Every structure is written in structure tokens, then in C-alpha cells.
Length: 95
Image 1 (cartoon, helix red, strand yellow):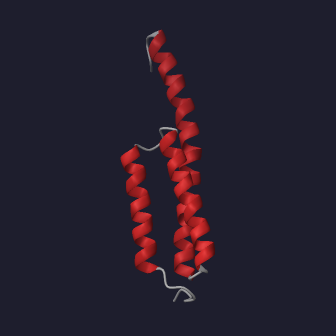
Image 2 (cartoon, helix red, strand yellow):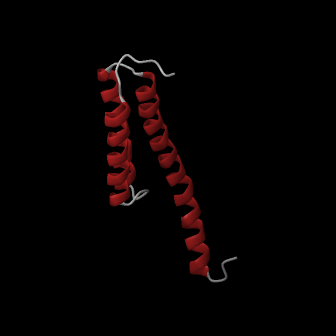
């Protein structure tokens, strides 16, 4: 438990940030999962590109709000693009 007045305030601030960051992080993960699911299902290229734009936008927004460090945001985008380029085969159904 915090003992000083300033420590109590920092605990309140940290809790507010934790809740706000959790929702942003959750939304970002959902957008990335939609892209990966689309890759696995072999959806049309235009729809996949739209999902990728949304995912990249969500990652950039999380970085701008301080939820992710900018290098983490860059890494997440890079890995997402690498996954899409490696696994995307249009028109194929998941086995």
C-alpha cells in the first residue's frame, strides 16, 4: 500500500492508465487477428489490404498514445507484413 500522498496519487493514475491501455491493446490485437484470420482463409486481396490498413492504423494509434514503444510498434507491423507475405495464397481455403 502507498504511504505518502504522492504515492497514493501515482497509484490512482497508474490504475486509470492501465484500464485505458488495456482497451487500446485489446483493440489492436483484434485488428491483427482479423488480418491473420483473413490470410488463413484466403480472402480477396482488396479485403485483406483493408484489414491490414486498419491493423497498422491501430498499431500506430497505440504507439502515439504511449501504449507501445515506437520500436515495438514497428516490430509488430513488420512481423504482420512478413506473415502476410509468407502465408497469403488467394482463393485457398484453410485445411
